[in-house]
Image (cartoon, rainbow, N blue to C red; front, top):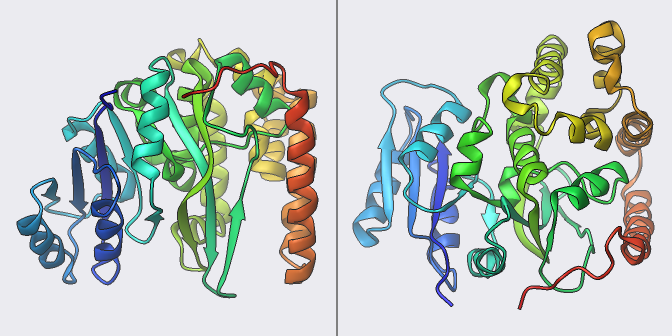
Length: 334
């Protein structure tokens, strides 16, 4: 079976010290992407030299250079617009896909072309503690497809988390339709639109850890989330954005799933302050806020052995709830 085409988008700013590792991870895949587009956002280090050296060795690598620094998401959006693949994967220079990521993602998407994306398990690397933390959803034993209704139910019942672009291969036109990466959402941008795509078209899932994201105090998300004023702006924008006309088809699913409760107590506070957003306050939303808010606050002060115990309990729960999925006879990809 011929696999669909994939464009990899790597926005880069002054990551010359690690961009080579990201490129190597794709060039050594069992199935290579159709193209790897590095959008350099006016770097002042040796990033351009590194990418140009790789481009001379492998023609699938393309370098786009911004004359001035536009920011991570505008840079990524430029790559999406210029891409020629049926699907796109957007990743950071310091993230790493693992062996089989491209082939396994595209193979299941070829079996379910109606899907808007394919996501897989991932892990994070805690730079401070030098620890790898795998996040295994355990939703099925082999690659499968979840319909939009099943995605909504999974979000509602907390066994599917907020989607993230860094572990997803997304149908390019569906991502453009959803607004690509919306700059005003900053560090939450790569979670909002992939979730919209999954609620519209359903999503495939590969039950394997196929990528690793580096987490450090200097990461874009952690630095941004610590800025309280900006975080309020981001959450207010997200609550408003979900109600705009271009998302009217999925707005009922957004409310029913409680998806925006993923952003825990700050999201609850922003919703409570504005009567226009009281309709978000469903049981699913509140349950998600309380659970995730408590978990995040406890996690920040918990020793590593306690976090490891939690992960074991969580994995058991996911394995148990999988037996009670809305549609236990999900069709499997072959």
